[in-house]
Length: 387
Image 1: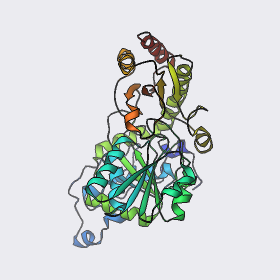
Image 2: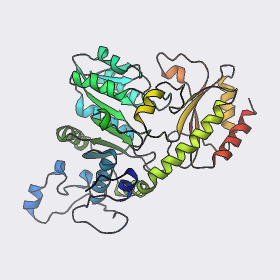
Image 3: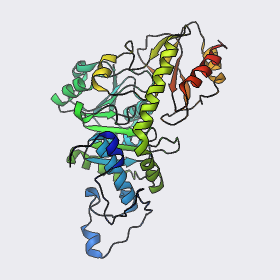
Image 4: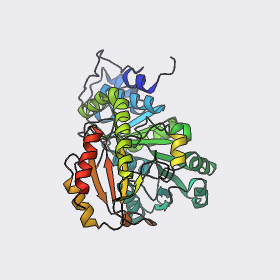
């Protein structure tokens, strides 16, 4: 079959599940116990190969279909679903690391991933070390003989630095180290991780794939069969299952995902440009803007930006003042996560989150939803009045 565009791939999948059902929406197959035709079929089925149905935790036609479609979008070969993005991250760590091993994480990593790294260090005898997200090829100097995994995040989900993935992957692979990418920010649409050299792509499907702010789910996507089998064993041993209903909700969001992503992107750039003109804001941390750390790499490797970016308030404003600003917003909810239709604002104590953070001022992260950008700008303008 000829290579399809991303938009077409979101709607037309080449995958047909075994014992399939033909309709526009995928069928929802609920199962814990799976019935076998006979003892021979029970003994011949291999859950790791996904060539048969063995138990609900290992998959149904519904979850197999979602996995296949997500792999297609990322141009991968294999996919495993997990109950959340963090569960998917944990699955990578427990599949690939053992006591005595070392893992490198960017200093701007998703904070629950940092918490997991600290837990691995404290209780499992695995050293988790943190590196400058803009280290690029310089990460080679940090790789030790026992380093087995490097996590990357493009960009950092709060401070928005964009890493040089090809340089990191080259340095890692020269020393036999695997690279995992948290590709949630681009939803697999605006950044092609495997083309840049990464070995594992992780996504939190909670975000754009769902689009409804109502589903928790994660995914791991790979190209290498042996690597997928290592992850699949951890998936099985940790009991990482997802419900067919949630899988259906994510699949229902896929056909409109790129349209929504592009709309988020356009709205966010308008709002970010307006914020950049405000005297109250000292810096706009949006990868598409030239003064954002790693912008040149974003321009080289990305085709879009989505709706998530951050700003730094001028240092003359206290945390109490910026909290009041956020409280005054009417169209922006205060909440974690993002990728849904509703805009969000979340203040962070970034100085306590980052080891070598140099900038003064309170950081506020925005998710620009699908509201009219003019209305969001007017809402922000009203909130600035309280400063």
